[in-house]
Each structure stands twice: as C-alpha cells, then as structure tokens.
Image (cartoon, rainbow, N blue to C red; front, side, top):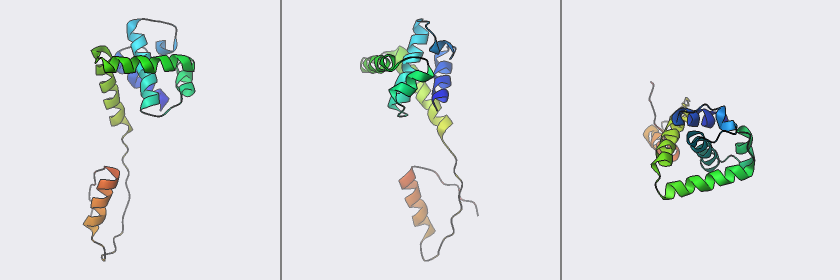
Amino acid sequence: MLNKILETTAMVCDVNFIKMSGKERTRKIVIARQLYCYISTQYFGHTLKETGKAILKDHTTVIHSIKHVKKMIDINDQLTVNPLKEILSRLEQETKTEIKFHIKFNFAINPMTVITDLLKMYDCSVNMIY
C-alpha cells in the first residue's frame, strides 16, 4: 500500500516519485513528501519507520512531516489541503474492493432484512443477481 500512496501522491503533486526519496528540496517535492508521510501514517496506520523507509528517510523526518501537515491543515493552507483532498479521494476510489458472494436464504428469514443489515453493517451497496 505504501507504493500506491507514494505513486498517487507524486501524481497529484506532479512530481517524480523517485525524487521524493532523494535529497531535493524544491517546494513541490517537499510538500509531496510531507503529504505522503501524513497520509500513510494517519490514514493507513503505517509506522513511522516503514513510512520513512519507503522514501529513504528516518522516523524523525516523518514526525516532522506529520506535524507540518497538521499545522498547514489548521491554517487551511490551500497548497497542502487541496492536494491532500485529491490524494485521499483517489486512494479511496482505488482501494475500494468489489466482493462477490452468494447467499442461500432460508425463507423463514426475510431476505431483505439480511440485505438491509449488511448494508448498515458494512456501508456497502448490493447488486441483486437472480
């Protein structure tokens, strides 16, 4: 998943994802690197160490990135907030999974009750195939 976050972040921020692992400090690359660190830890639960390892940085760089992005969100900095929203939107679309399964209904139980419960429990949609 880290590679997917890295690629999506690079694409949205219009930077080369290989340069995000380098020493280059142009504004676009720094913002992209910081957003990657923030998203991978705060939204996907990756550790500081594994997040940093993917971009050849140590955990202190990741910590600094997270703090900086949080500060930029607090002041509603559009150079940070807009790409963050776009990256999260794309990742959400790309990580949605279609799950297909068959259910045999015992007609003592109303099938619509089961389907309604599934929809509530898993926040999903159901396509009925007969």
